[in-house]
Length: 101
Image (cartoon, rainbow, N blue to C red; front, side):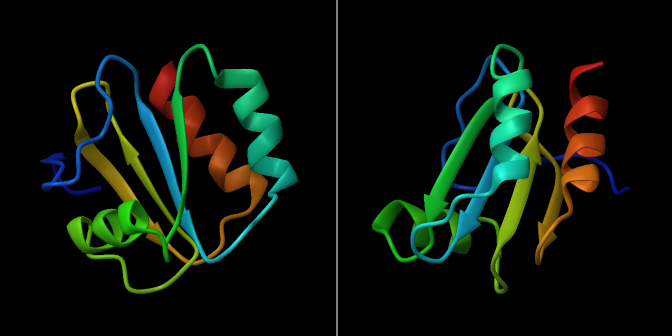
């Protein structure tokens, strides 16, 4: 994995690691919801509709071209990973568990 980069103009919350998902329209990802229920004390979960103003700003800031997408950042806003395309629950779990260990 490349060295961490400071998040672009879009402001991520600081203080806890962040798992940001960008999607189109209304989505209900049961796997992500399960992980959010398990890790909400350790990780800030953000879900943005890419067609909203905030979602468009985030997609542009992180160079996201394909949805769904996820951005993982540490508690200081340093982007650790960006994934475009669907993730399995196992992949999401692995990324989040690595982040909070």
